[in-house]
Image 1: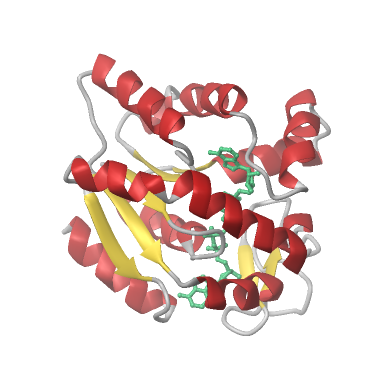
Image 2 (image 1 turned 180 degrees about the vertical axis):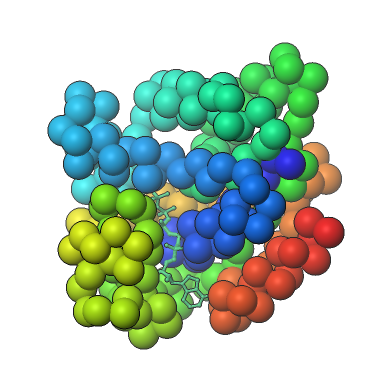
Length: 213
Ligand code: AP5
């Protein structure tokens, strides 16, 4: 099962991708998480990606495509995966399609988690992230058991640098210009499905489960 999660920043792609990964036993592959892990570890890739991420801009396609294709070539992705945050541009989608076609394979579903811009800024300012294990919380909707501490690994939770309101606005602009065209791209391929991401997360997951059944 090969799934792509589409949607604006903060729509809940990561939240749903983790639920899909758990229920269907496929890896959750997030380019954002890969970049953040590299930033945390001070790698060259991380330092390069950070220059773009801090401004709410996309990391250049050459860099992103390379890390994604390396990741999905790993053994644990043989049975499928759920991609979260990739592709984000038409050229990225074309490279992925070509790589899959060469393997005689294709994407099964591109799931668009639809949330209007008005809801996004509020959600992002309440998000808290664990940069050690990748877990995500929300101060109102999914608070950690102990304030500021990750339930899973005990590390401190942070407001991501790119979740500050002025950067979120840039990310939304970039989304509308560069990523939203993917909705048409996958609709034309007949694999697009849309879920209402404004509903509570269990309800959103119920809609996704119905699609994947
Ligand atoms: P990335 O990490 O992919 O960020 P994003 O797409 O902007 O998505 P987010 O992680 O911010 O949000 P999400 O949709 O996963 O929402 P979440 O589930 O956390 O990318 C970061 C940056 O890396 C990019 O800006 C770019 O610079 C770079 N990058 C990454 N991939 C790239 C690529 N392919 N090409 C180029 N550059 C790339 O939910 C958000 C909050 O809402 C959480 O607090 C959550 O708890 C809460 N929530 C979720 N669902 C609900 C619900 N149903 N109701 C209420 N609250 C909810």
